[in-house]
Image (cartoon, rainbow, N blue to C red):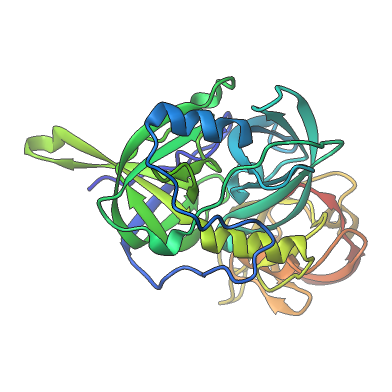
Length: 362
């Protein structure tokens, strides 16, 4: 089976891939959520009725990736009338600014990233100056079953306007994928996902997977295709959605300001380093994250780090890959002082303590 690919945001600068499809532990179940969970059982709706009900609660998310000189586009769900929006972390990852176009009223808002959880691919935005927005109806993903008909809506292709519609059925529950960012060489394993055969596309990430009653049961996050028959002539879509119960549980945590080992609240602390590989440190058996470039004025620039240096520790945490640096910085914010250890190209070891600057989200 060929490697699946994100349908996530519609990137204009990089692609992401998926692999290792299998089974995993069940997703989180929401308890005492701040967002309304509708329990009455309404009548089954047609696809056009579902779209008419859900569309006003959707937004198009456009992220400006200042340091990568690009733009990415995705979808989001309005959770409150005052403009709390749920989307995927990878839709806003690397964003130096985010704007949101509300489908319901057609207005464009600047968005503040309230917080994000990279390991679960969840982010919460707050729209500046928003009020009176219609919100999506949240369903209960613990009740979904294989064979159930579903509808996905979103900003397919980054075209904006009326959300695109795709239909299909749930194929499996509790699926696992590994999402890889080829630009940074990092990956995240997502578990407990709903797998369907809905034909979602780039730009649909952060959009809703909806039941036939018009309630959101999943947050679309990735898609791919499998081949069968001679020379892989037949293909079948595989779409993956985060169960809405788990997504809302994390959104509640973010809204409550409860940081964790994986959940970051508020502005992102920025080291200001780009990486290209994870080699052995010169003259040692240790490894680290090799610096490919340094942003002028950043914390890294203040230390004297240059391309070719290898970072081996951050705040006393051993670094063996670029992902270790992101993990070490999750709990930090702009202004926090951190210690950095690195080895230069001649094999000389260095340490420095510097304050983090304001960096891109996610």
